[in-house]
Length: 99
Image 1 (tube, one colour):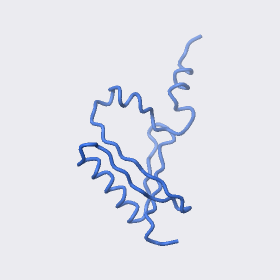
Image 2: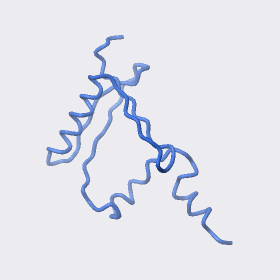
Image 3: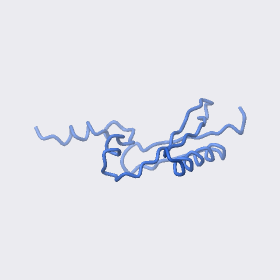
């Protein structure tokens, strides 16, 4: 496999307050930086990095700029980024119910 392939792994939060990790080689991190720069500077507010996981499978990492307030409808609609089942809105609402 070519060592110049842009490798990038993005590990999201499993639950609240967990660390997010972005790991990549120089080409992968540069591709992500370029996508972020494009999102910040373009009128569309988005950018895409074409990168690869270390198994050789390619994917696109999308970057979207949205400067609306954190309690606005956009942020409510995109959902939370957590990966554990117990962090979903449905589970949280269900466990807070009084029967």
